[in-house]
Image (cartoon, rainbow, N blue to C red; front, side, top):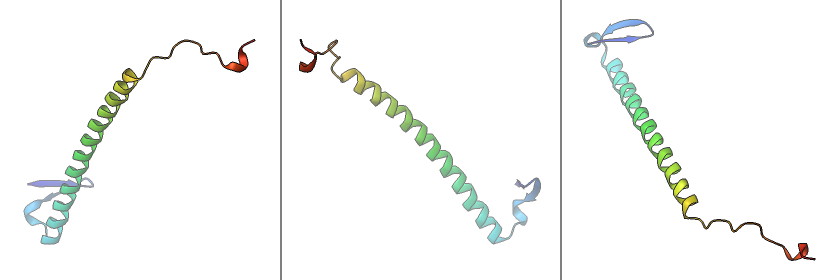
Amino acid sequence: MKITIDGQEYESDTLSDDAKAQLLSLQFVDNELQRLQATGAALQTARMAYANALKAALPQPMGETIKFGDVK
């Protein structure tokens, strides 16, 4: 399998054991970042839904209120 790093192609079979280990770590981190970004997007969507549900569950304001200091 060929991989490209900084525009340079490499055959994965020819990489040193250390380079292969670093590549595996990099791939793991990239996959984990994608997973976390997807989780973050799902959580943002859930947050908006909960915020909207909260607003719908709150009592509706009852028009204008009169403070005792305003009564003449």
